[in-house]
Structures are given as structure tokens and as C-alpha cells.
Image 1 (tube, rainbow, N blue to C red):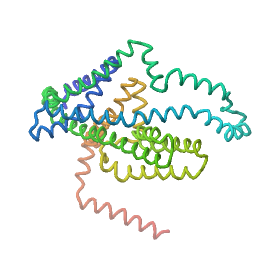
Image 2 (image 1 turned 120 degrees about the vertical axis):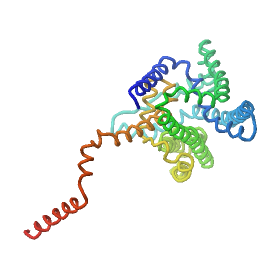
Image 3 (image 1 turned 90 degrees about the vertical axis):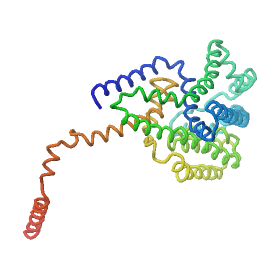
Image 4 (image 1 turned 45 degrees about the vertical axis):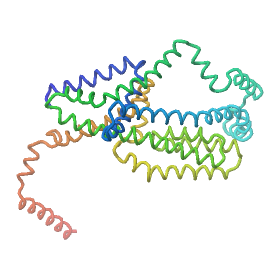
Length: 383
């Protein structure tokens, strides 16, 4: 890569980060639309191969996506709303249990009692707020409508997502071709190779990891439902979402489910049932789901995943959280490329060293090995 090519690449990366920082308030619908277009492009390409036009294929994929989203909302939203309502109404009973079991231990050993609350006042406030807001949906709606500008902005962003996704998906191949034409000719082969590897990594993440999260959420939710836990779907979906970080979903889910089971049943046997549910989910993830859907193509260490999410949120807010893992996965591709270039460069193995090693003939090497062997034997005989 020439100096001009390196300068062009650095300027492009710098401009991209500056643009994300300055435009982050309006980027959400474009990023979500781009992700939907990226996920749908292989399906549209297959439909084109079967004889459908590009626009017709996009329309079919959109209808399928819409039916899936509407179906999930119609099935899960009422269940989750009911479980959240039950959770809020059961908070006073949970505090009573903590006061009876945990408070004596904390007072005796540490002199503190974080659960020393006025339960009558807490019950009154919860009942008042619940009746005023009309449930979780009412509370959310009240906060959103507090500012008409925020409400209009939210609606506009949601309405933009399908529009952006449709046009990007329809013109995806054209846009990819235009971008490739802009790459400097001496960088084209290297750039195309890196982009192909990035595409493989992103495919593994978006189509693989997100599918794993959904499947694990369903496994945990159904398993906890058969255990009889009232918050089965809420905890299952939470554990599935947390599974974006390896083992975090398992840890968060089993702790939340264990606490919920103790509040609901007061029986230790249910902890065994919960452990079996999450053990089955973890076993399926490690032996079936991850090897089948993702494999080793992402190559991100769990610590790197946590750091990427936190760093993205700190630098760019919610947009940064959305971008964190895809950007980290692509960054790993370039880091591996730079590592390979370094191993092949003269900084790692100077030509003088390589030449001096090459000058050693086989008899000379064998003679040196024999000299070392004789020296070792003489020392052993002296001892």
C-alpha cells in the first residue's frame, strides 16, 4: 500500500468517526434500516435467482419481516406487560421476605438494614402510581407525551426505518458496486479481501449471534414457564438479550430466576429446576447453536465484548451501543491483517537476520548440534 493509499484510508476512517459523533442524534433510523437491508439482501438475491425482480423480492422480504415482527409483538407484549405488572405489585411482599430473612443477618454482622422501609407508605405509593398511569403502557405513554417534540421525533424515526431499509435493500448491489469503483486501483485487491472477511464476520454476528440470543431467550422462557415461575418470559427474554456477551445471559438469568423463585415458592428445590433449565440452555449454546450458527468467525474475547459495548455507549450514546459490536468485529479483521503484515515485515524479522540464518548450511548446523551434545556429555562425565 502506497503512502497516498494509507493517507486516504486514515482520512476515511477519521471522517467516519467524526460524522458519527456529530450526527448521532439522527443516525438511529439509518443504522437500523441499514442493518435490516444487510440482513435481507441474501434473501432478495435468492429470490432474484428464482426469477423475481429486485423490487418484487424486496417487497416479499418486507412482508415476511413485518409479519414476523407483528407476530412477536402480538404474542409477547401482553405476556410481558402482565408479568411486569405482577412484578411491581409483588414488590411489597418481596421486601417483607427480605426483612424477615436477610435483615437480621445484616443487622447482626454489619449493623445495617437496607430493607428498613415503611411498607404501608410504599404500598400506597405503588397503588396510586399504578392506578394513575393505568399500568406500564400508561407510564411510558405519559413520559413520552410530556414533550410533543420528543413524541414527534420518535414517530418520525420509527417511520423512517422501513423507508430507509426499502431503498437501501432495493439498491444494495448498485451501492456496493459504486463503492468498489471508488477504491484506489492499487488498493482494490487488498480492500476487497478485507471487506469480504468483514462481511463474513458481520454475517456471523448479525445473522448468527442475534439468532442465538433469540433461541436462548425462548429456551429459558419456556423452561421457566414449565417450572411455574410467574416471571418466566420476562426473565427468559432478559437472559436472551444479555447473551450478546458470552456467559452474561446465563449469569443474569439464573440469578434473577433464583431470586424470583425464592420470593414465589420459598422452596430450595426450585433452584435445582432453574439450574437444570439454564444448564440445558448453556449446553445447547456451546455444543449446537454457537458452532452451527457462528463458529469461530467473530473472534472476540468476552472482555473485548464488554469493553466495546461500554466504550460505544460512553463515546456515542445509544448509537454507540448499536455500533459497538459490529465495529469491534470489523476492527478485529483489520487487527489480524496488520498483525500478519507485521509478522512478514522487516521490523519483525530483519533481512540481515534472515540472510545470516539462510547462509548456515546443513553440515554447519549439524556440526553445531554435535558440539553442544559433546559438551553436555563431558559435563555429565565430570559430575
